Amino acid sequence: MILGSCLCGQVKYQLDGRIYMINNCHCSMCRKVHGSAFGSFLHADTDGFQWICGVDLVTTYKAPQQDDRCFCSNCGSSVPVIEKEDNNVIIPAGTLDTDPGIKPRAHIFIGSKAPWYEISDSLPQFEEFAPEEWIQGLLEKG
Ligand SMILES: [Zn+2]
Ligand SMILES: [Zn+2]
Image (cartoon, rainbow, N blue to C red; front, side):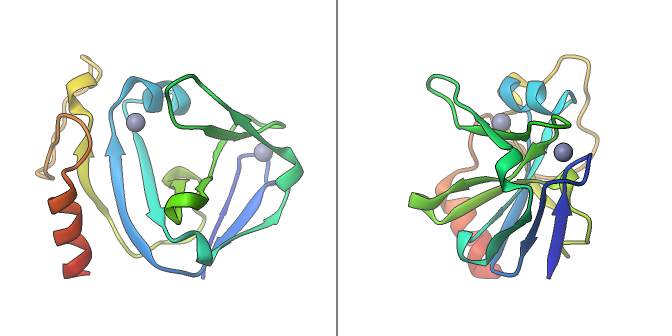
């Protein structure tokens, strides 16, 4: 069982299902949302995801032509975004309170990387989204 929470602790969630991967996203939206060089997001099945408390504080920012962004209306922390139609929950990895047991697998959207940040690890780097074949290969390897 994986647990997570926002900064003020009023929003809490648990995850007990299949985890796909963690990616570091360097797109400008993720940089803004996280206030950092990149956003680290864990992707998992929605079936295993459950809010424990504070769901009434979860506010959705709907930007035109972009993915929804959810945050705690009390402390401003990014919180998970549920994409029911894709059976995908996108969890800002910084909100995890327990070790998910996996490490980031790639840097994505490096085409819009911050000019002041140098990537210094050897993970694969993709200009935009990771290619579908690459993701499939990752899932098959487990
Ligand atoms: Zn909060
Ligand atoms: Zn992004």
